[in-house]
Image (cartoon, rainbow, N blue to C red; front, top):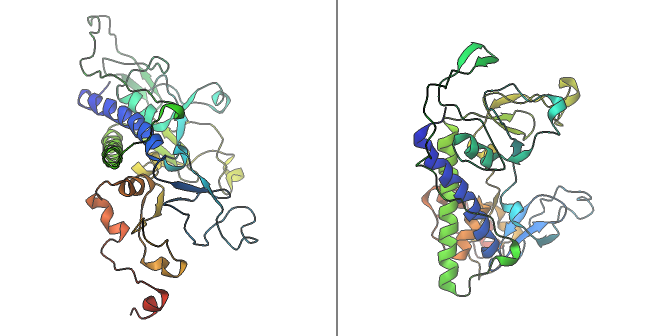
Length: 313
């Protein structure tokens, strides 16, 4: 059964994700975002950062230096996929079914289980509590005495993702600021709403790898490739997930002054960090949210030179 009070939240989260993706496609055309060719590190700013932190192939030959290229939306919003459940109280997905069951974004699956109706992702809706026989077996209650279901009053129009070619960049500075603020608001709505849904709808994560499963119990697909997975026969070690497992924030270095000098390798200890989406919106003109100010280290003065940094006690 659905939690009726959370159905509007599920629709808001679903639309916030689509709005966030569409806005990022437009905003990234005016605010440069760089991605390393060899590792998964990204940087928001006019030029890539100079820190020697690359751990990709042949990093030793490059002395840990990054080779920057243009980033995509998937670099900022890490795609986390999971199996779609046609019946969240049904039997667990077996290893033999791993290729026959569709994989969908985990946040979309959470919204579907919370009440969002998508034609291409059907799921079973119960109107009476089930009768549990044992830990893994339930019996559906008789619903013949119930009237025909009426249209759900909580349904909202669903947004659709636009292609990259239709994403127009803001033409003026004012439009860029408004777009940055709307993007940041969509990011906050997405995370806050997903956090509320996860309190009622169980989300699991593997303790060895990043695999996520939305449902009461994890699947049985033996596709874990983490360290010593042979000893577990590829089985996952399921545990309760947190919000960052479902929506990884992807922290990047905060650029204090976009129009000023670039980041310096010797002053690394003075710079802060922020989620990539937040840093992108801040560089686009949005105000810094209070919750991210400590990690961005806005209250720390940055020395003007390396010599001045050496004088800091």
